[in-house]
Length: 335
Image (cartoon, rainbow, N blue to C red; front, side, top):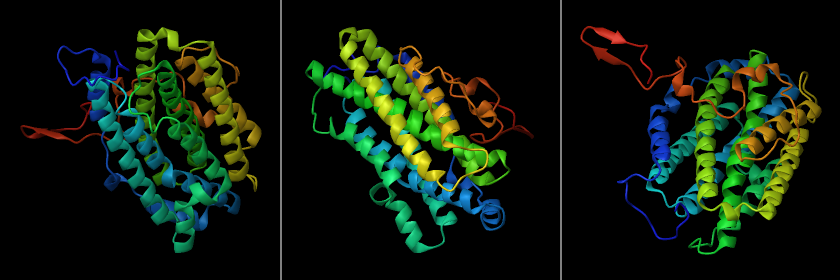
């Protein structure tokens, strides 16, 4: 049983092969910050970005600067020790690697985008000092703190607390907060701005979709083994959580777009975020609540419909490496 407090370290016979396969797939998805190039971004920030867009970018950088550290903190303290599946813990190990890679990416982003040292300090402390970013962090900490002192999930109430934490980070943090920020990045990309940031976001996007898929598979396994935990009370709490997450993200939106950005508006972002929230509700096994449509044509290629396995497609943006076979160098093999 996946929430059994008695530790299971046995990989044979394998009880959750779907998690092992997810781990194997995630290993194919490896990139490094050495592959990122922000040189054109510098020119755009100097010559092409409007003051309104500059404010949006500063808020994005401030959010990104610590967001993945918060996710990693929760993963280590609250996910790993309670999911009693060695296969899933293997996947979580790779996820932790991803989160550290994202942290390094956003460290480079801050260092490259913000030359002023005082503004850098402000960006790294945004989760304390910038109200719209702090509100996101406080939302995360609320659900982290609720289970951080739990040693074992030995009661149904503790198990429900864990489920709420898992839903929070899969559906609300990685699945909503991050996807809101991705939309801003792809808006800028659609205007031909900041290709380095867009490339980094493409790769982070792929990682995050896999993290969400892993969490949703874990929730499905829990629901299969502990159906009694998913009662009307828990469903109501999850819906309330997602509503709160929407409010928190819209507060960030109001701040990020406070000077006005042509082609974006709080109304359009709210419609998009409702669309994203509906996809998360469907993944969680609930009906759509908002029935919103995606208002952004520039997000068509970054759809948030239930997650496609992009490893089934030919990937050209980056590969794990190339392999020499005889005298030929092969570039077209999938990872």
